[in-house]
Image (tube, rainbow, N blue to C red; front, side):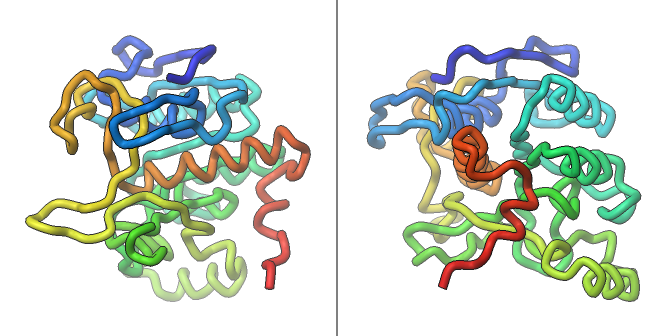
Length: 263
């Protein structure tokens, strides 16, 4: 389990995870080495400083205000890399209208790196939400290891429903911002290779608490939890980014977005 975490809550629930989604994500980034029945697990950046801010309730639901407060607190706490395995509908375009996207875009200019889940609405044209659509977010999609690194069928892409009935606005932003406008920016393993009997056959294992502990493996209390989604691919990227920041390899999201593509 991850340790030495500063914990805060933005809602009328205690700061610890009663759902399991958040601790699954947290331990994918920060978890100490742990032997599970599925094999050996370890977080991507176990030695990084950690701040945990609870913005969603036991059912994984929240409000725009709780998300905005959580984001502001993460910024005020001095966090350099902020993982956001969550999302919702855009309240305006992602460039200069949606509040969450505006915060991400503005704070990124100060060197804060937001690593955001693309969402699980499928690879159709208008499926990215907020804050994943933010121009300066490092938005993460999902690919499947057992399906030859092809995109997971649930992984969202390009932009949000905001542009569905606004093709002229979408074309204008695409021409102006080019690749930064197209989402996701990168991908990582998030499971979901194929469906058999209405069940996904690939999951990500991490340590978790809460009712999601037994969601897929049907074994409650062992904390070796199987989940899939862009929520799971995102913390892999956050761990890599946090390690790169700690080692002085990168300093901001623009170092990543402008890096040359290897041959």
